[in-house]
Length: 85
Image (cartoon, rainbow, N blue to C red; front, side, top):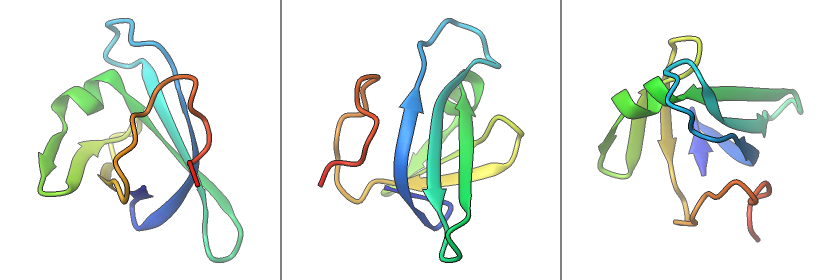
């Protein structure tokens, strides 16, 4: 999975509770300088997002634009926390 041009190293999910500001997904990655970054998606941001081809466009929890693409389609479930090999 690629988030904003960076290869994802892991993610975390929380339950959907019907609160637009609820952060339900947190993606984490390390850049080429080995600095760790993350982006959090809210229920509202995901609901307002859209697929365009292989890319999902939405706003993150801070209101910034995010582009996500799946390199391999794998179901993301709460128990899944590492990228499969």
